[in-house]
Image 1 (cartoon, helix red, strand yellow):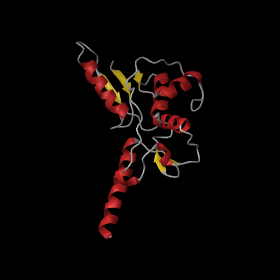
Image 2 (cartoon, helix red, strand yellow):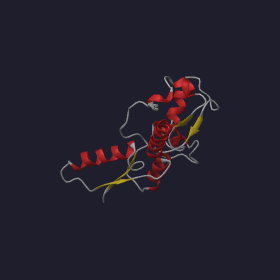
Image 3 (tube, one colour):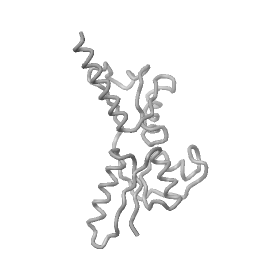
Image 4 (cartoon, helix red, strand yellow):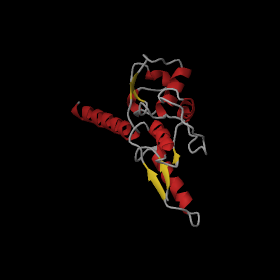
Length: 169
C-alpha cells in the first residue's frame, strides 16, 4: 500500500514540498510507493478532512488550521484528531508588488487590491495576522482570494497592461 501525501495546488508551495518529501522518502531502501495528491481548493481544510477520512496518510496544513481542526472551530464543523508530525515550511510571508507600484511599506496597501491567497487556504490567515499587527483592518484594503498561480497571472497581466499603456503614450 502506498504512502499518500496530501499537498496543495500543482505548482504551489505545499505541492513542491510534497514532491521533495517524496524524493527523500524514495531514497530509503525498500520504502513503499509514495503518492503525492494535490488539493484543488482550501488546501489545509481539505487535507485535514482527507486525513480524517483515511484518504491520505500525511497532509500539509498551515499552522493556523491545525488548532482549528483539533478544536472543531470554524471553518471546521467538528473536531478532527490530528497532530503535527514535522514542520515543513517555516518561511516568512512576502508581499510583492510591481516595482513601479509606488508601494514601499505594508501600510501603503491601504485602499489597494491585495491577493492574500485562497479564502480557505493557509496564506490568508497569515496575511491577516500581519495586517492586524500593523493596524490594517478589514475595510482598509480589498482582499482578493486567489491561489499562487492566479496571483502571479494577475501581476503578469498588470505588467503587460502597464507596458501597453507606456507604448501608447
